[in-house]
Image (cartoon, rainbow, N blue to C red; front, side, top):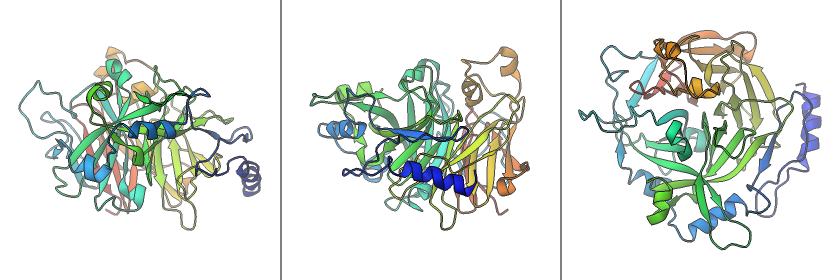
Length: 426
């Protein structure tokens, strides 16, 4: 889009997307020209309910407030394991090019019946972001990694969760805790609030100050079918107890939805992945949404500028370009972009992110039996022309997050599941 047209559209949207006295932004009524990617803010599930933020405040009046560092991380019950190999079975896995740090999800164990995060087929990790995205470094003196998961098949009704991982103390065995993503609900006229899990694919996550943005590719049971980006408020996290804990499927903490941006523009974009770009000098930070495409065509990558408050500046896209087929994660770094992609024809276990994003409930036996191959990292110089191969990633690569000359990535498949960082300056 040329600068003149961009300026005109921003001017059209600036007035309706204004700050209210309460500090929130109201939904924009602007309509982008055909081909643009416009997002409209939603603050409440319907006219019959209070805003999600107000419902979350009501929840906090009867449930204890939970601070990310003081409560969630310092009391984390789970521990990652030393990354000794790239697969749980001999001969499995591929080490990524430029690898400089990583961990497995679970400590070493010889109990074959123990349900572990690295092996479960009920949850699949997808998105990754860090406190470097959120705050430019640490939160409460801790370097924290956030990973999103979606519930699969009989766990789809459990929605999505975020793992907060503290890599500060013992980075080889980091402590972490799962937090359930929820939609708070309070009908008008009621003085009580409840919550429900948020049903989404959670294919990407971007940490923006106190907001955790999650790519909202709807699942079969999702109430909001338009797709877009959902924002969860870390300042309204609570600890659940009693009947509320049963409603939260046994999780100790829930993170409430604050607002979401729905896909309302002329260009129907699949919000498959999400990342944050902090690298543009003298420019606002921005959200980067990328598409997974398995039909052989190149996916689209779209940028939206953020206001200093952490909200989208106006809901109108700033820039879009084409990536690669089979892209599972994308980040913009300066004038360039990096993509994490599967190899064409490489299939993971049934229920992998690739099959879910294709809108399938599973894969054929023939597809499942194809051995998954190493992922590929692509560099797109200037975001013009075609990207070039820039290295190998672990099998089953997913989302990306940029961290001062390094990229965070993760592998999704059971028994191959790892979180790792690679050095781009190798």
